[in-house]
View 1 (cartoon, rainbow, N blue to C red):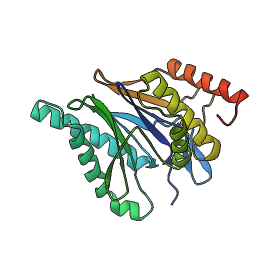
View 2 (spheres, one colour):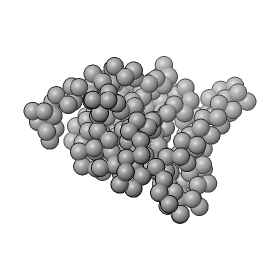
View 3 (cartoon, one colour):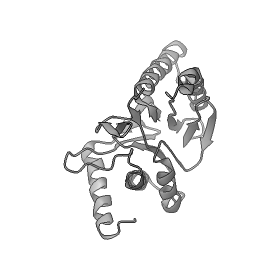
View 4 (tube, rainbow, N blue to C red):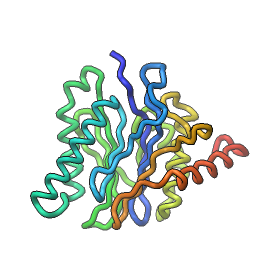
Length: 228
């Protein structure tokens, strides 16, 4: 059975928090199922989650995750710790293991601002629900190997939010350059990556005009230096 699949998600920590970005393409076999799917969502006020894998199941998992975090906050009167959120998502992924064994896997990327440690943190998962904390940057999805290689060459400690956003857009461009399932910036349709930043002020989605300006800068640079 063919089902739409989401692909590449990247996350980068910076001195004020963490940035997560995702391309907009969903594929179904060799067909582009959707050109403007959204793969990065706020989990709650201080965390975000990006989806890779079977799109329908992943979106439904994110919605349930959002509801559970909101429910906890209303019951307890405070937000769950970032580690607690990461652990809850791990259990939800483990609950999907039966579907994953049938080829309908969901492998999200989770990131947020740790109010206790006052830093941005990134968590990756495997299909069994295994949880792993990543440092500085990470990527998941079919184009992740290319995106991570790009980040490995360009990332430096202490980058600010603007630099982290550009790093994410650059990495997604490189992923799209080598992975057919990852969508590059669609300038004619003005479809840009979804980019979210999380700091001590909370999670926010960067407006399209702000992301578009970064995309235009990256594309202009690649016109003279295609390899980046």
